[in-house]
Structures are given as structure tokens and as C-alpha cells.
Length: 314
Image (cartoon, rainbow, N blue to C red; front, side, top):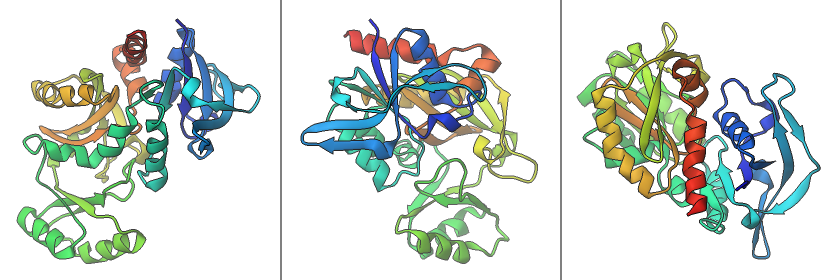
């Protein structure tokens, strides 16, 4: 049966239609006969017992510069939809968290993907802490002395904001670096959140693998290779996507975390693997499905909708 689908995301008119995962998911939904409604997170509201959104019915096409047609602006009751996609990009701040609380109020009668309760409780850099056997040495702290001691133990470290995304604010501090105190002052002057530090993994020069899981099952991977002289491999930071297969270690990692993701309604997840280590579990707005489709012919969007349609049919 056709489903009524709402997309809570950043402005759809400005997305890169050849890279954006939300666009590909929405295009697949449309091809399957589902109707689409688009709104931005700032247009989500709770009004006298109902969760409402102000936005537009849309039609999509893969045509650069002319990829979306908007219907008339209208306010809708999201409780009357079959599916709502929670797909705005981080930062994972109180605004983001508030949207998860509001969407909690209509889920699961309206299926919210990914489950907003667990998106809120499983932010990318914190969920990995449940799997220390899979991750590099890691610390989360706001205390400078704790971070100094971690660096003294491991020498070469990565320092980054706990709730950042896209490679923003990621610094490598090698044994000869003298900038830890200055970076600490900069970060703590911006917000009151802790920092995350991890032992630097030299294998990142070979790439940071993005493995896509749908309902807890791996469907494929792409490798993101950093530019020369760059530590960050995120595509937002200039990383180059390459075709890559899944290794036995990748499958071991997926077999360990997959049941947890499936149990908690995380339908579309992208994990980051460097060498043999899991570094992040991305549940807020993972990317990579268009690159995977180009490299391997894997239609991840189709698999995602098969899972959602089965959940709605049930």
C-alpha cells in the first residue's frame, strides 16, 4: 500500500542529488508509490496535544538544478503519517534532542526512522563505548589533566568534539605536538561538553571505511581516503570515496553490534572502521548509499524501504 512519508531534514533544495542519502531514500520511496512531504526541523511543533509540521508536499527527479517541485505550503499532523524520517544533520545539540522528544510522541504509531528515543540515547561517539573490545583506546573527558594523561600513555592521539560531525574540529596531536592546552581552551570556551580522545590509528592513511547496515545487517561498504597531508577522511572534508569489500573483521564487528541496532529500531546506520577498529556508529544522518550503489550496484534504498514496508504491514 502507498505510504504517507514525511522527511524531516535540512533544506532539500540545496542537497547534492548525486551524493545525498536522504534524496536517494526519498526518490526510492516515490518510485515505490509513496507520497512525500518535506519540512525542516525548525518547522516541527507541539500544538495542543498534536505533533505538527509546516512544510510542502514534494515531487523529486534526478535532474541537477531542477530536482524538486514543491506543492503548496501547509501545516500537517505528523500523527496522520505512516513514516517520518529523522534525517537532519548534526550538530547533536539541544535543538536536535528536542526534535527527538517531539517525534517520540507519535512513534511507533507513526514509524519514525531511526527510532528517536534511541537516536537520542545512542549518539555516534557514545554508542561505541558499549563495545570496548572493538574500538581503539578511547577517553571522554572535560578535565585537561585526564586528557594529558591519556596522551602521555598513547603518544599520538585524535582529539575531537563529542557531538560534532563531518570531520569538523578533528585534530591529530602527535608526540611532538604542543597544542593540546590551546585546543582545550578553544573547545571549552565554545561549550560545556566533554571532548573525545582516541589513540591515532595509522591505518587511516589507507582509508576510513564506511560500512552500511540496514536493520542490523551489513549491505556493503565504501572506503574514504584522506587527501595527502590530511588526517580526516570524511567526504565533507575532502575524502575520496573508493570501492572496497567487507573483511572478516568488518563482518565480526557487524555481527556484534547488529542485533543491538535492530532491537532498538535503527534501520539505517553507517559505522566507521579504521583498520580493525570500530570508531563511530552513525545513527543520526548517515551517508554513503549513493557511492555504494555506484561502486557495487547495491540498492540500499530499496532494502531500507523493504524493511520499513514490512514493519508497516506488520
